[in-house]
Amino acid sequence: MNILTYLKNLLNGSNSSNKNNVDSGVSSTMDKLKELQDYVSSQYDTVLPGKTTLETEVPTYERYEYTPPTDEEITQRAKDEFSPYVDQNKAAIVSEYDNKAKELNANKESRKQLYEDSTQKLKQAYDEAAETLSNDSLKRGLARSSIALNNQAAANKAYTQGIDNLLSQYNAKIDEIDKELNSLDGKLASALNAFNISSAAKLTERINELKSEREENIQKAIEYNNSLLKTEYEQGVDKAKTESDLYSDALSQTQKENELKGALSSEEKSQIEKNVYEKVVEILDSMPFDEARELFLNEPIFRNSLSDYYYYTLYYKYR
Image 1 (cartoon, rainbow, N blue to C red):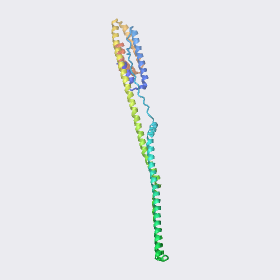
Image 2 (cartoon, helix red, strand yellow):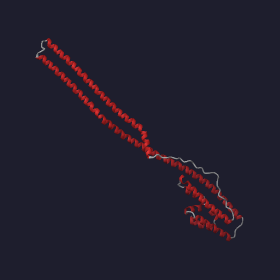
Image 3 (cartoon, rainbow, N blue to C red):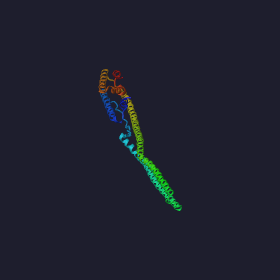
Image 4 (cartoon, one colour):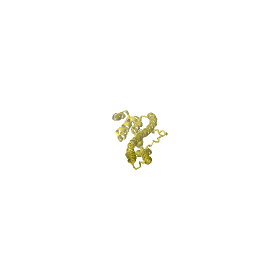
């Protein structure tokens, strides 16, 4: 699998922000492999095949950029949404109590008119009764008698009591209306306060809804962008695997061709094998152990360039 495992480890768990680091790591590793390839070629006086690079580029997909609103922006949006609702309902509450006040004041005017009409009728009835008594006393020659005076006194008393009753009833009703009018301010304040509490709860509920929407949108953006990253990675792996397979085939073919060109003496071969081993050690030791291990175990050039002895010496170190 060669460089693919190393590439996979670099990409594992990554996102678009560390793409440059991935590219840098891969480039550095490819430089080391090229260095080893050139060294082996110089030792055997031959040329190993170059890495096959496919012309097709791995596409990069445009990410979904989502800028989540701040808590302050969410709160302001909720307030803006609720502003017409609050204004309309407050106006309706105030209007309701204004209408009640108008009705009560109209009732007061109606009671006043009724009182004035009633007193006028009572006065008219008294005047008619007094005139009747006076005419009757004159006819009977009793104008200055005690009977006439008693009748007049009784009529005056009845009139006075009637006026007092009408005034008492009128004042009682006006007091009742005034008390109801005076209570309207307190009732209006209570109604507005109850509405404020209710609207504040609704506003808080809306703010929480918008915050939940924000979290959902953030998660959707992350999932979408991760799916793009996964697609890019998989396509990159496929491209690298194809290039690796082509290189492995070319390397195997070159090795067979070199074997046909003639064998080296055992001393020359041993020295070259040792030189190649020391070069491999130098390259691997310059890398972090885990990266060196992945590279050694998965890159075909190490197995094809080292003798069994030297290969398994390193194999037991990195397995």
